[in-house]
Image 1 (cartoon, rainbow, N blue to C red):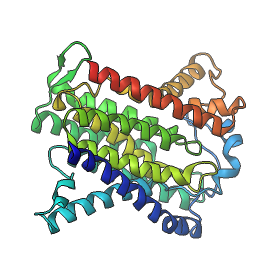
Image 2: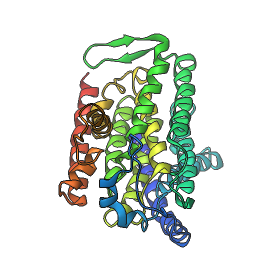
Image 3: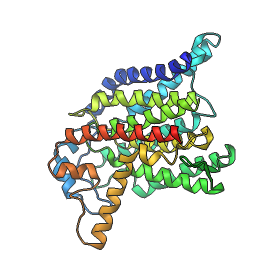
Amino acid sequence: MVFDLLKVFLPSITAFWLGIVMTPVLTYYLYRYKAWKKKAGKIALDGTEAQEFAKLREETETKTPRMGGIIIWASVAATTGVMWALAHVWPDTGAAKFDFLSRTQTWIPLTTLLLGGLVGLVNDILDVTSESGERGIRLSARLVFVSLLALFIGWWFYDKLDVTALGIPFNGEWEIGWLIIPFFILVSVSLYASGVIDGIDGLSGGVFASIFTAYAFIAYNQQQIDLAAFCATVVGALLAFLWFNVPPARFWMTETGSMGLTITIAAVAFMTDTLGGGKGVLILPIVAFLLVATVVSNLLQMFWKKFFRKRLFRIAPLHHHFEAIGWPGYKVTMRYWILSIIFAILGVSIALAG
């Protein structure tokens, strides 16, 4: 019991301090090479210029560095490597107990975090070096990458781990067989679409931290200690990022952070479902309610513009709408943090009770 708790908390604390130490170095290079957009603006989902967004972000878009998400996945990777190395250098000591890198629990989410982070990094580099209106890797190409990665992992769940059912809160399991593969793809792509929640200083870091904390608790309750330690490590890295992302943000997370994190949430949700004897997938819309709201607000905006020839929101996604109607960015952030904690607690309660 004590070692299990230490195994969860020690990597989290390690990731936090590694992130704090790494940040000054990263910041130096981001500012030295002016790693921000050369031209302010954003393309809406319908392909038009997002004018309201330009009004809100025109000044900071070309002054605040991107790629802050490097701190998150680099801290997680470094912490994982340190714990693994200590366990193999001193295998006969207590250090071996803190190695949480395991084939059965952490290979999949660690892979999604690192691959998503690296592809997102390429996108961000292209984004900040472009002098024209191009915006990094085309969205269609990023969606293809996310879909192919999700296809492979969904197949792995189905074929290698024999996952063929979803846990239904308070009502057993729902057998869906091979459909688990396209369902995992759908969940992954939907979560990736929610990555646009990274738009206000401190907002995304707090929301993602609440989600991963919830799944760390669920995994720990299922005795998936390695997975719980991994989720807690991500939380520690997010808190380090958040330390420098509170207003005024030193840098923004952007794709190198949000792509890896969103796909990893999908992987962790499935790891804590029937595979762990729980209900991790169907409580995801509750735990990650603000991510769902972000995607739904974008879809509603497109629907309204197409069929009613007007906008439902001043600007989508929803958190920018609140800014556009006069809420200060810090007020949106703080209220999103509060709501993310409430929904995380509600989701965990249902998962444990069901």
